Length: 405
Image (cartoon, rainbow, N blue to C red; front, side, top):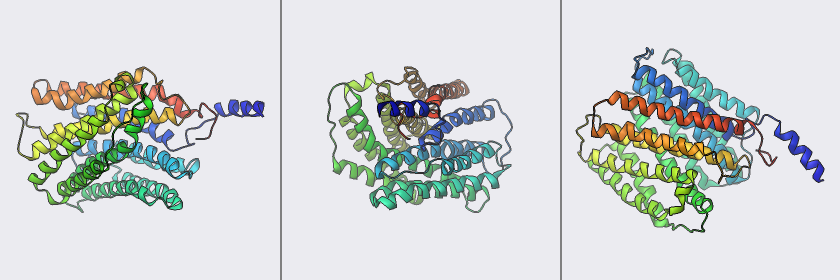
């Protein structure tokens, strides 16, 4: 029996495993696209490269691809893997997973050419979203885990946001692109708050050397959820600045209290933990500046609204997803999550430096603004290139323990 298992594992190690489980192709694809998309944006924004876009701005093109392109790839990879764990029912793999991934790739490649291939890019993108929603919903329905539909609901709202973006491109919805981008930023932050509440304290408790039991409060979780829901509704539909300021600053206070309860000094010894924790605080700082901006506190820098935006996107979505991908990829390939490559610590630090240079430094001085933006982009590209180089072999090969997945 032992000899048979060893032979099976030995054969298994040589197999191509990219489409065994959802996190594999989508994490690798997200990492590669994070590099390509940022390179393309720098060619347009800094070096004034030409890009054929009609009815949208180049900044909206960039925002769409980072949110609905990169962000949705990470969401797809994470949730296709998480739903399998939550329900005990297999999510799509093999040929159906290849089809889903190819739809995402097709949309990204076509949209890199601006709006020249917009009808085809939109069709592939929206089909990808529908296919993903169905793929997540089926095992949840089969397992009758109805509470998990809260997460599927957010993915559905992201699909609606993407539809609104494309309708805006065609002039069907006035300012559709603006609603879609603002909505996507908040929806991704909402997903991070929801999933982060489940996994960040879990990762910390099991990732530090000393035994800790982090404090959790149901009233606090419920309050944060309701406040965020109120903020989302107000920002997207009602748009009363006073309410935005109230909800955002309240979120900063309550979520800050929750993060303090998740703190233990041992996280600084583990890059896969301090990166998650710093990202959570960058999101929380984003709430503060979002609220202050709505309340009328404007910095001298004319683009002060970019501060909260990039705290959320680079510091929140970027750093959180990079850290999550690094940890999940180790855990779900049978590797030790406490022993990642030491290069990943530098990659996480690169993203932290990127958000500082893109969002914080320009608030203090507008001199050399383009230089700060370019340096921040280079740090982003370097960080995700490190991830791709380190994790591509891990994602392409079967689990180290020979198990399926």
